[in-house]
Image 1: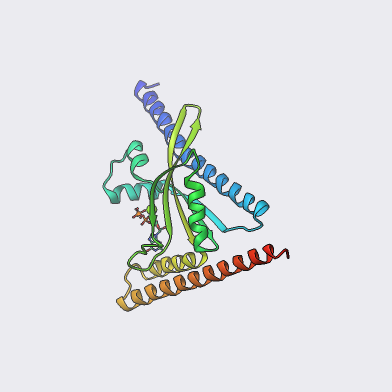
Image 2: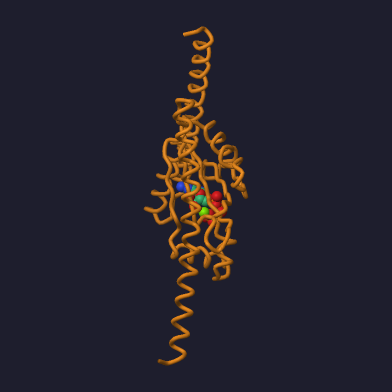
Length: 222
Ligand code: GTP
Ligand code: MG
């Protein structure tokens, strides 16, 4: 057989393996974070009789959209550059019941010994100009494979049901209108975001009141 052809096949085989290992590291990192969230959820349920986590969704960015992002950002097309620059290949979205749960969950994840908090964007204290609210964390977790340890980035978005409701529909509307949205509609969307935020604040205060009542009842021996 042609010597060159054999070499090319070998190179392709090695590259394929390297790519597979690369994508798997993000899958494993997601699984680690999902386990952490699941442990918190179960522990809350058993010992506090309360579950602050409504639902959890995770996704891996497809190789196509990783490449599109690399191109958009003008970064180098190498595995090293992707590992360094694209920090949302593994993404988890946690929907919580109340605003205070968001901060509690954030601390419970970020304070774990094997989790490194790399970045925290609090779009709840500082909403985006369009009204978007959410807590965004970029963390790193160690993934151990046969060739050693690798620190892998995971993006964690934590939000309430109301924030999630707004973000999901806003995303749909933008998609539908192909990103050409009239100014008055943008204004209405940001007003809707404020309405969602008001609802969150209202629910939070009811939740606090309920907790106080529960404590009073408990102290009174009921
Ligand atoms: P990216 O390079 O796109 O990740 O931008 P960034 O690094 O500035 O990230 P940022 O933390 O601001 O937002 C990242 C993710 O948050 C997006 O991929 C969306 O999932 C979500 N997000 C941010 N802003 C909005 C918004 O205005 N509307 C909606 N629906 N989602 C948003
Ligand atoms: Mg992103």
